[in-house]
Image (cartoon, rainbow, N blue to C red; front, side):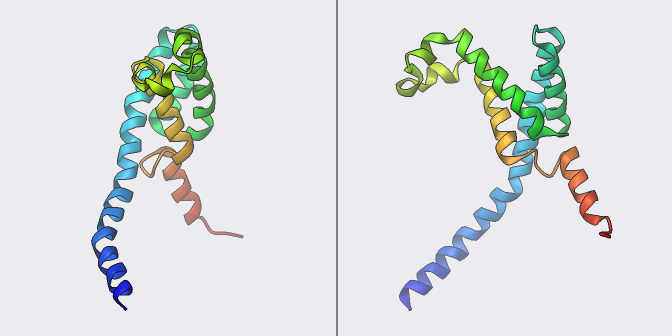
Length: 140
């Protein structure tokens, strides 16, 4: 009986935090997509691997085919980390000095692409709008 009351009070206290966090998820994903998708797009306009960054960045920015676009961006950022930050990666230095990897330029781009791949673009995106539109269509 006492355990049930404790679980109930814990649930009453904790449930609002879960609701707030769940509602902020789409806003956070929107912020990450807009910020880093825009940067991907700009680097694509001026870079050597421009098409991947240009198209992938635009897709992240608007949230269209985001998970699909995130895959080549993840591969590209892993390659950039491997080439430009060889010492940190090859000597596994990033395991005991994670700041060395976090300071690397490709890291926030990689993190954003992984976030979008894992969690999707969120409700505030073209993908989210298309999903809601398809779900409202009659089934035959």
